[in-house]
Image (tube, rainbow, N blue to C red; front, side, top):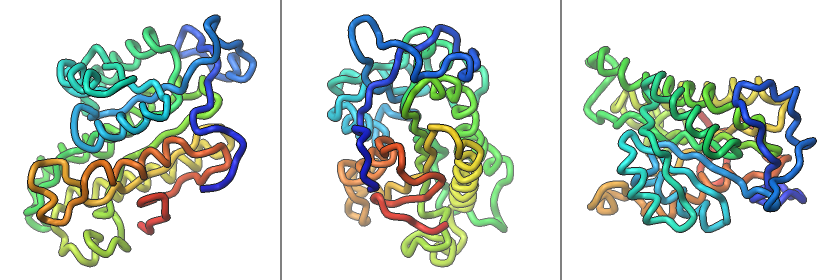
Length: 276
């Protein structure tokens, strides 16, 4: 990771009141700190009620980040927040496939937390490992892309105004080696076209990451995609070679806490570049 004088959890400046305000009219570096002192970094994680999302939340919280966990059911988010010291729950459900749900979440977040430093787009459609391109149900494939690609896109558009209020904003899109040409375990050349919608959706997510990073290249917003690796998010998965969430989460945390001169628009696994 490149060296930089900026700490991993650099405090952000005091937020403005309206998420639609033009960031150019409210430059973050010109605003004073909160009256109680510097504000800690705030992270929002989708699908954080279990699995890799919950573990990323836990590890970020240990670094002193104020973590807001989300789930489609707000009760699940609340339960996860109770299990994580330093975490809070989004009080409304967040269904990233639904525009109204995401818009509501953005308004609630702005009113309650005011600014955002780290957006981790973790939510994705579950892969159908028996699906192949030639035999896929295209209605089901469309639903999968609506979550994996367009859900992430939707969340990013909705929360980018809040990220622009941060001095050190980061976006991490949780991707997969299944959307890669070079992943030796699940990449396109070796997986025989299985889990087609999942793989195609993740490849499209990597492309979205690169395009967004290019658009934001002259801003403080750093955008990257991360493959956490094959992770045991269900009981018994370790028997099939999946590693514990505790081992997969650090790569996501690394991307979320990059210094200001960190890489942009890349695809990484365990903090190392992965071709796609």
